[in-house]
Length: 393
Image 1 (cartoon, rainbow, N blue to C red):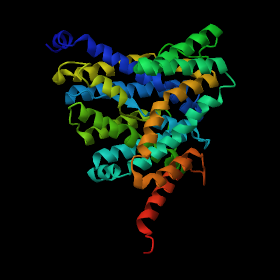
Image 2 (tube, rainbow, N blue to C red):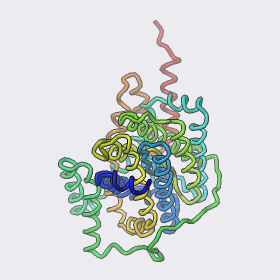
Image 3 (cartoon, rainbow, N blue to C red):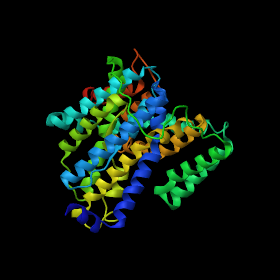
Image 4 (cartoon, rainbow, N blue to C red):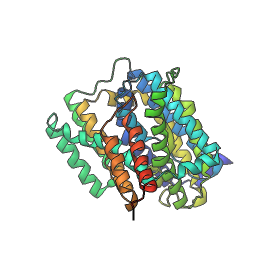
């Protein structure tokens, strides 16, 4: 009874919405995930495992949660988390980075399990979290223009395509940029996959190495940006679509999925926001009570992507650095815009937000600890000074 009902009562829009969300979610920022793996010393096989694990951790839990909860649960990998990792200059080993992934996942699990931690996390000033995220993202968008002398015509052409599509068909802006970039690279004969790349995705487990510097520099900021910039907005998307979300259960589920996938290179999965908006509205399915099937279909598409993750990741690994920088920079324009807006919303906290942003974007590394952590320290210090130090009357 279940299978016929599923097929007969599911409109084509459910499949098309899930497919569009998959293309946008995967194609839009997989270049950033590849850069994150490269920055942390992963080889081509380990990056392929990273992408495979992320797709599996998105597809299977998302489909199961949608089916069990009867709401469209759409998961994604942590885009700001990938940016944080790609910006790392600490020279950590891949095993140490995975230890940081595990630490961040454990923090997410505890947030879902312990209500008090969830409430405490919810009290982190949004402006400070947004400022740290903006500081992490800014160098990638700046690099978009720094590579113009290396690939002037290609960079200008890709930016032009991005601007035209953002104006006319916003959802398809990044896929259009990717299609154009791959077309040019194919014409140049620059699309050779790394040696040894197979047809199917694979998993390469690594025993995590735990280091307190990595936990502070990468693990805690990774947890924070994933919670503040992905999970919390994802809950809002579900709420806005008319599905009061079981917040603790969903946060716990994303933490468990991240924890299981971390040894294979997955830096973290979370509730989606932008792609979730595609799958949770009436355009995806006219019946709100049946819209959960879109989440199941979306999860199924990600499992298909996981099956072919190795060659898909290989295309980006083989991409020339300048082109990879352009694709990544354009993909992060919208997240950077949102982060900049978020850090300036509250007038009272703007000074703290600006200094958090500046400290994070500076790339400051002190005592072996990276700039994302020091940005938070600066921001909280400024807020504390404003609260505790009162001017004399």
